[in-house]
Length: 272
Image (cartoon, rainbow, N blue to C red; front, side):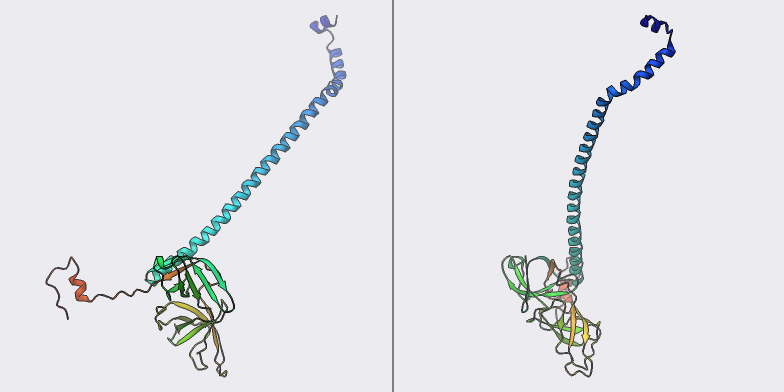
């Protein structure tokens, strides 16, 4: 009878009433399966998020490491570019060398570089960075060299004031940021801010290389006349240096120069 009534749709209101009464029971029966599915999905989503978070964290660490390396390479590129530009400015043969070891004691300021006699390095050769003179070669080995810094207490370099040409001696003080000018007297025309360049006397350092900037000068009533200067080279942070050879090739005489040119037309110029 119920099947016949359902087929003929004789009691639709009664059917709706029974359906409404049975709905809570259906929800109650299906709720464990639904809740279990939601819990499983929640755990799966959480596990997926944790795994994704872990991978992103690892990728972030790798990218940060690469970024640090790129930053170091960028700074190295800047330093090398500065050295390269300096080599063009000095107009002399130069070779870039990297620091191997640093010895900074009270009585010794020496660094070791990875270029030696196999590369043509010689004792007393000038060494500089992109800002100024670093020092000179002290000892030479086949594959390395020791460079004494201008701040070494046993080192002295002839300098002159770029402003007026006054010559003096800059002596190492044992401090990386300080040079002593012991020969400056109270009547010497020198003042703070003056640029000191190599004078070329002594034959070790070619003339005109920047060395230091005058920082303090004793008052005129001070008979000692002590003065100090700050090196221009970044002695506390250098990683590469420039090994400089002076261009000692003789300049050809005009007649010899033209006589040796293949495009010169005409009789040879007479020699003196």
